[in-house]
Amino acid sequence: MELRDFLIRIKIGTTFGIKKQSQIYQTVRDQPELSISEWVHTSPLIADEQRSDLVNYLHSSKLKRKIHENEQNGRILTIADPAYPDILREIYCPPTVLFYRGRLDLLQEPRMIAIVGARNMTRYGMATVKKLVPGLLEHQLVTVSGLARGVDAMTHQATVDGAGKTIAVIGNGLDVTYPKQNAVLQDQVQQTGLLLSEYAQGARPLISLNDVLEEVGLQR
Image (cartoon, rainbow, N blue to C red; front, side, top):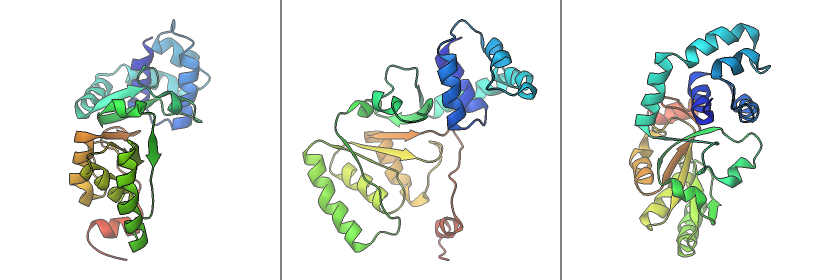
């Protein structure tokens, strides 16, 4: 089987968690001679009652359309690709498939710094980001954050405003903007930096009631 294609089908066509996806990758990469059908029907990682339905869906036109939609929505990177960063391979249960828009080459930058903080940013947090980020950019560091409200968003914005390099790792599909007030910033990041996600098109973030109220302009 074509490993890259198989990983994408598993990612988009199943609800398997990241741990199971990683286990599947570890077993499949050493069995390139097997077809998708052969692997599904013989793998101990797949329950007997799931095998036939899974094989049918992995070969279905419906799944092919979903994959095509994701490819149109952005680009896809798998752990089988040479561009997959080596440092990410070393973590526990590395994501087997990533979706992205923008400059994938930023993942190969040798100097990165992650900055995350409170959504309800204090004056101290704001002052710290304003003071810290310009110095980081002077030393050619790539800023990495989560595009959330507060410290995350301010880190990305300060980097973009300073013509620096930034990577936003988001908890939803590339076609989803969260929070809504970061729509312009999200577009700026994907145009000049890198927007990265473990989640396929249409995936919504898991948010609290407070988040929902704030999204519609109410405070709890």
